[in-house]
Amino acid sequence: MTQELTAVHTESPSSKPTGWWRDAVIYQVYVRSFADSDGDGVGDLRGIRSRLPHLARLGVDAVWLTPFYASPQADGGYDVADYRAVDPLFGTLEDAADLVRAAHDLGLRVIVDVVPNHTSDRHRWFQEALCDPSARARYHFRPGRGPGGDLPPNDWESVFGGPAWTRVDVPVGSGGSRPEAGGEWYLHLFAPEQPDLNWEHAEVREEFDSVLRFWLDLGVDGFRVDVAHGMVKPPGLPDIGHSGQARLIGEQVLPFFDQDGVHEIHRSWRRLLDSYSPALRPCGTPGQRIGVAEAWAPTSERLALYVRPDELHQAFNFRFLNCPWDPEAMRRVIDESLAATASVGAPTTWVLSNHDVVRHTTRYGSLARARAAALLMLALPGSAYLYQGEELGLPEVTDLPDEVRRDPAFRRGGPATGAQGASADGQEGLRDGCRVPMPWSGAEPPYGFGPGGSWLPQPADWAGLTVEAQTGDPHSTLELYRAALELRRALPGLGAGPDPAGNGEGNGMRWLDSPAGVLAFGRPGFVCTFNTRGTPVELPSPGRPVLSSSPLGGDGRTVLIPADSCTWWAI
Ligand code: BGC
Ligand code: MG
Image 1: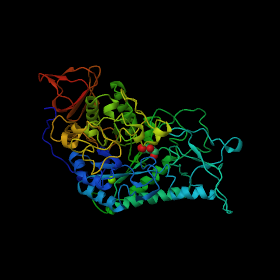
Image 2: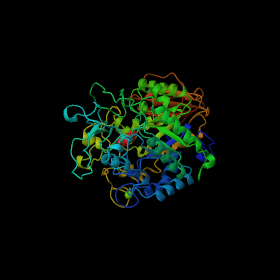
Image 3: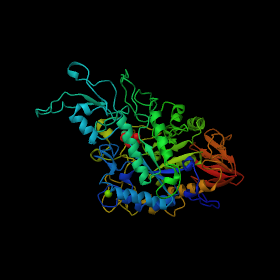
Image 4: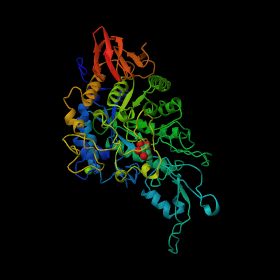
């Protein structure tokens, strides 16, 4: 009974009139690791296309694809050399167009990544800048400090560890002499292969407008904006005055993140997105094209500025992801997130895992907790992001040998991101263990990932976790997610709730009295109970159970809520 459903009717995403993103469930595909079509061991666009039916059956509304653009892959594609080309590793432009069309045919929208904070060092602009100092204004080049300019221009640290500056050679002069060491320094908040762009330069802004149009014309439904809080740097690039590892996600205030100037860029992008009215859409389902900010801001209120009505549509809620297994902390984050986004009329988003953090099954220390957290997330008002493989309950792979790791943060010794949790098995800040390719079928690696091997080794004991093995098993995590997404569409009180206009007051959520360690809230026609304790808790039955992450006990009148569990009730 744990996954028994009430009668459901499924609504096709294409039939939602507008504001589809407000309660959308968006599935993140980490392109390298989803499905490989050509046997080179690296996931690709044709591989994704062949697996779209899995996503349609799962019941998500949209897919977000991580970067598949031409790139030397110094940071898994977040180092883009050509924003309008598909890297041959992943396919062709035609494959991209085919994928978008095929997704639309299945009622799935497609969001692609845009990486505006930095380019690859192989980008034409940076190559020009290396040869010709007069072509450097699109980046942040500065002379060094100290005798001979041997010290970096300021004390900023890269998110991946080490100084955020690298020194270049003096370019070859007209006499054809060999390049000499000791030239200027350039800024890179991430790896040295990712030089930061100067967004004060008009050409940078124009170029990105054109890149966005390029992909919108191809039919994509929106963009996930990488490092949306980093594009504008403080005037004069001042010292921080203290050392300390910069993180992409984490409780910190850094002068190079969350500058007010970024909002003007997001406003102009919103105008561009809005100009792509449904009438202009070349194919597929009508609807608004959206922007989602990957942004870290020091408070929920500062984060809400990114989703004001004239800015981006959504921002990732990393505070929720960062929350430890603690009911009070979770409740606080939920309240603060809802209040902050309501104040600007935007939907809240929820996310537990992504390609930069330890998978939440491992972070929270058990599959039971991961399943419970997923049901909690999917019961909250707003939009939810799923990371590929979480629907299978995949754990972090914690024993990858050093020689197969590709994360630049690993080589540079900096924890890129860190989501705190009960048990991350020493993997905080290491990002390969969550990027191990998906297991689809079969008893041994590569588990149907593709006709060849897989770029990161898959564990030998994943046979029971494949999509094939879990399909049809009522106790599997995959069937739990499928049931949850089906109910989310069927129960009117779920998803955005009764207030699609999103003025923030109508999501109908209210906290209910509950014993210590248990969170309980109601939404119209619905109750969610979430037991964070390691022991069962007896409660008067709040309604008719429609889905539970662990089997319920009790005699019908009272109910025994299992340890580390979440239950959905129809009332
Ligand atoms: C991405 C990371 C990437 C970084 C630099 C982040 O937002 O999610 O994977 O390393 O940006 O582009
Ligand atoms: Mg391939």
